[in-house]
Amino acid sequence: MPQQWVLITGCSTGIGRALVDVCRNFGWGVIATARNLNSLTDLKDGDDLRKIRLDVTNTDSIQSAVSAVEDLPLRALVNNAGYGQMGPLEALRPDELRLQFETNVIGLQVVTNAFLPLIRRRGEGEGRIVHVASVLGRLSIPMAGAYNASKHAVVALAETLRLEIGKQIPVILVEPGAIQSEFRATLKHAWGDLPERVAGTAYQSAIEHYANRREDYAGKHGMGAEDCAVKIFNAMNAEHPPRRVVIGADSFWAQIAHRIIPAPIWEYVLRSMNGIW
Ligand SMILES: NC(=O)c1ccc[n+]([C@@H]2O[C@H](COP(=O)([O-])OP(=O)(O)OC[C@H]3O[C@@H](n4cnc5c(N)ncnc54)[C@H](OP(=O)(O)O)[C@@H]3O)[C@@H](O)[C@H]2O)c1
Image 1 (cartoon, rainbow, N blue to C red):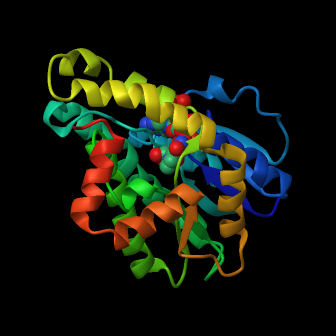
Image 2 (image 1 turned 60 degrees about the horizontal axis):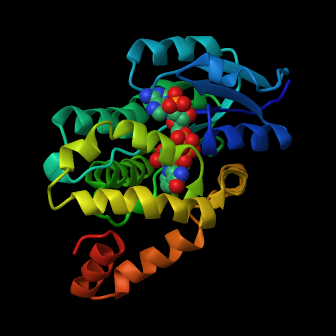
């Protein structure tokens, strides 16, 4: 039975799923969580794995998950669950914006507060809290206002939490660029009737552009979820964890460019890249 365990949210696919395998390979016990337990059935059982149902937007589900793992020596929490709500701000429905924040922001903080007492039992400096934000927590792109805002909020929550408890429990902010996962398939599911909603408007070409071009970019050039997971694990496992982990050359260079390129040029480039003419 491992002496250190990590709880990961959103393990059905993508980065969360890859992280389950990486952590187990390095001898950590993993509490793999997902909204739908069936999505975890193919994970190989073992005394280093516990599968728990956890919907980060549901308080009862979070409390049940806490009760189900109280007996384990929990050392770390990785707040990975999240999705992208796309669409121009003008066409965004209030409920779409609310659900984006319920999942990516409020859920993340409620989960953190719920598991903090268990992590505190490890003693000073031992625990780890990891927030998976995005390069879009540091800069914004068009057609993704809800997601941009949610990830900027995650950055602020991580920075604040670090100021408040960082001396006892290191807080690690992860800022990936494009990663190969189910993210873009889920994103198209989440935008629902958006293409019809924007049909005939100035946004139509931008949404078509997004559907045809951006997803190709991630598929061809995005980092593999496993490579991303290794970087998260290394940060979490380090004796002196980094405050920020920028993952992918695209995230690194975009953040530098955003800082040094004059705003009018930056905006021109982003509009052009995103089919807004
Ligand atoms: N892929 C990228 O390019 C990229 C870049 C930067 C940041 N990120 C961030 O990385 C994290 C992981 O995304 P991914 O790329 O691995 O995408 P993914 O393959 O779509 O995985 C997202 C995970 O979040 C889960 N999730 C969504 N809503 C949830 C809820 N209410 N409760 C519990 N779990 C929920 C999903 O579960 P279901 O299967 O039940 O939907 C899924 O397991 C996200 O926070 C994302 O914003 C991704």
